[in-house]
Image (cartoon, rainbow, N blue to C red; front, side, top):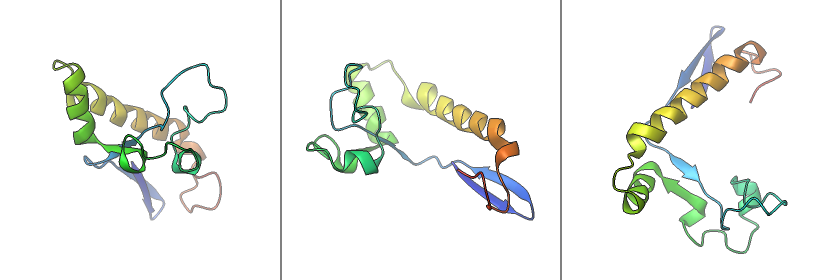
Length: 109
């Protein structure tokens, strides 16, 4: 989601095309250093297996949908996951709207 502010009015934009960031290590709750749980490039790019599974540890929605369908043909990313992602992003914006400075001076994310 992208936020834009013009004339003191904030608007959010959601793009259908996008990607999810992945980890370069197998997921486990036993690792406490955050390398499995933090998927941003600042953390992942310094790990030895960065890019081992996906280039740049990113997988586009279409590719993710295809991967999931190979695991479970009945699961539909576009019907189940994608709408939920949009709803969560919308909820975050609504929950924090009063804390966002439309002039981008302080309290922005």
